[in-house]
Image (cartoon, rainbow, N blue to C red):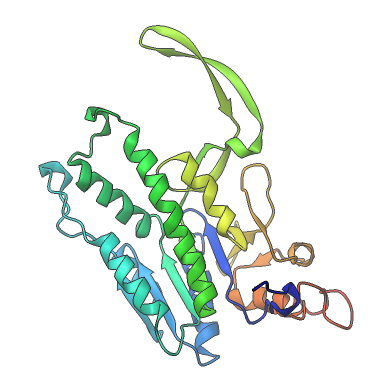
Length: 299
């Protein structure tokens, strides 16, 4: 049966959030503020943690979490013992059926957790983590992309089934970004001969295996922000980059970017502040009765 978009209340529906940034740039702070926000509203918080040390950032919060790690993994001795992917699949299914439904699901971090779990499972199947020794050294990357796609789809479906916000935290890396459309041709030496290759403009992307997967992450995101420290801030604080600047491919489906740009001190790294802006849309994707979404946003 068809749905009607006028019934989609953005202030009540869980959103899919992606934050990308280097270590110590405010990603966990944002997720922690989201946990506090849902707990204050009587809902529960769940999280996948990887590495285990990330749990320190949530100390004192009433948040159930599952650590994703492979303590028996030993690449040097070709011991590819992994349970990360299986643990993730099992716990995600359990939380999806939980009653009452959680208010937020945090993945801190995605690249050290679910992404690494997928990669470890592929290496175990291949029996070798040196892809150059495989008959087809590109196959693991292709398999990784094929498996990350349904994983991202499952996380997106989680928020539709539960109404929970899904917050994915990624470390960043600089790589070529083909969707930018900005390319140039170079001559690279391969095997003693020069060959012509087409290269694309580089951009900050989620830390993943393979460009194809990196480009698909933002396709699932309602909000995609980059975290960065505010230089010389005292007390120390971080803020969010909300618009693409040619290097960071940020943006949002929800029409709030214009109002975020009006914040005189930059976009604060606080979940509740962003939800205030979403709520001022009246939950409809349009400004609420009384005028545009500007008053009180930057206070």
